[in-house]
Length: 261
Image (cartoon, rainbow, N blue to C red):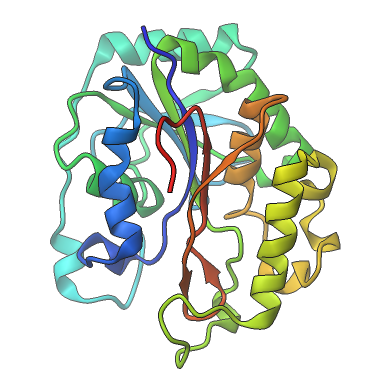
């Protein structure tokens, strides 16, 4: 079994499910960056928060967004059900020290919008693991360290969120890939911390320049910390950069990826 990468994706707006742009092109290219077809994908999305870890093997998706064009609510995604692999993952999580209860929750758009672009008809199951925002940033780094052995099991772990993600500060007049100065300064600080392996700084985003503006809540930021934890002493690679509405970073990072832009 080939060792899988671990990847953080900025999942962007639900409309990216039907748009063609640099970010969706990046998603579509992901299968070619992997050393083999994954045994399974385990995704942690900024749209599922629980007080204690939960996981889902649902083959249904939810359209958990409001006020978008009607055709987005008619989109589907044919997912593979594999009860044997579901049972294996449940036992594997316990063995890795991740006590998670099973949920029937459908996969949210933080999972299916980017992964559907990469695998329109996946030949492997897609599972979701919840975030526990109340447990804090360091806890999520430790969660990543616990999940790291899944890579050697052939499981692709994906964190899906958005590092600079303040919907209240978006600039509707911003040009594509144009960043507001404060958001760019924050992402520069994040990039510097990633390059230096400064986990302490990354676990305290509000102490970085303009951190309070860029990260008003932790939900979309925490998936990055899970992937950071999986990296251990290694450094994350920057895989993709981009901006939407001035302040929404499309930046994505990973480890063990065979190609990088």
